[in-house]
Structure formats: C-alpha cells, structure tokens
Length: 252
Picture 1: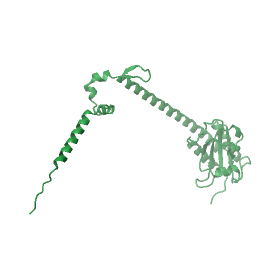
Picture 2 (picture 1 turned 180 degrees about the horizontal axis):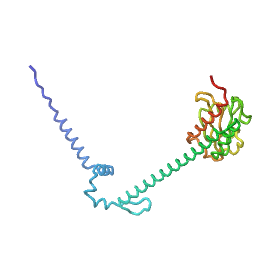
Picture 3 (picture 1 turned 135 degrees about the horizontal axis):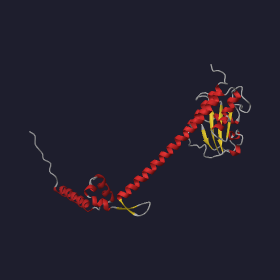
Picture 4 (picture 1 turned 90 degrees about the horizontal axis):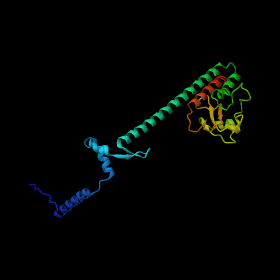
C-alpha cells in the first residue's frame, strides 16, 4: 500500500513571507513617482492627451532660440523645422558633391581623349605629366618610371633611385603632406611649394612591383588629405600604366 504524505508549511515561514509581501506593497505604494515613470506612462498611453486635451494646451516650454515661453505644439514645430533645415543642408551637400564628381569625370574624359590621341612616346608622356596637372588645375606633377625602354631622361630613373625605392615600399595610393627631405617631394620641380600631394604607384598587375610613380602636388594643404577618396586617382593610375605598357616588351 502507498501512503499519501501532505507537505505542511511552517507557520512561522508563512507569516514571514506574508509580512515581506506587505512590506513590498507598502514600499511601492509610498515610492515617489519619478520623471521616468511619467515619461513611460505617456509613451505607453498615447490616448492620454486625447482624453485630456486641456492639459496638452496648457503645457508651456521655453524656446531654445528665442528663450520665450511657447506651447508644446510650437516646440514640436520648431523641432520639425530644425530637422527640415538639417535635411535641406544634407541634400545641398549631396548635390554639391555630385556636381564636383561630374566635373571631375568630365575632366578625366578630356584627359583620356588626349592620351588616346597622342601620336608619339613624348606626346604621351607630356599628356600624362604635365598634361594631367593642367587638366585638373594641379600646381605640380611628376612622372618617374624605371625599367621602361625608350623614354626621355627627364622621366626615366634607375630602379635603385631613392624615388623608386620609396615607391616600391608603398602598397597603395597615399595622400597628404610630404616630409621636407622626402625623395618623392624632391622629384617635383618646386619642392618648397608642396603643401599636400598624392603619390600613385604604377603597377602592371596588382601583385607586381611598381614600374613607376605619378606624383601630383598642390600648394593647398587641403587638396590631398589622408582621408580623401582615391577612386579617380586609382583610375588615373590604371590608365597611366596602360599607356606605359605599350612601351614594355611583350610578356610571354
């Protein structure tokens, strides 16, 4: 036979538990209402102001602009107008950036046309530099190439030249200021006038060592900055390398 056992609660424990519950209820009943409580209530009770429209009309705030007392509706209107102004400003910036990009693209098309129309090696090199600087209104430019036969001494340098060594250690396009004694700075016609520059390594393939470098320099420190986009510079580098490849021996 099985015996049924019924668990009995200790009367002392039960009294203690009931007293704790009453204490918690008393504490909650007397706890002050906080601003967060009010805010949560209003957020979770959207029809409150429909039932108490007079309260909504009576709410008075201080305008951060005129510092006068205004209604809640006026404050909301001010916030909406400020948001609209922010959106309009962002839109105008986008339009300006778009217009700048269109202008840059148009100039690149002009430069590509000149590059394709070049009838000789010297004409091609002149189109790359200084032609590119002229097209984009850049103060100075320099093209230095090594290991490419049939080019002028003003462009050709040895593979162990300080400029070539500096570029071979550079993994990607670099923009910003150039140090006073930097070999890349000294490759320009007027090193003292360089406030910022873009250094574009020229590679036949992405996994090969560079065969040259294109340096664009400005007297404006904000013209080439480390945080600027380099999409158009990458395109210029690819097109310049493609033009120079015509002078290289065919790869087997």
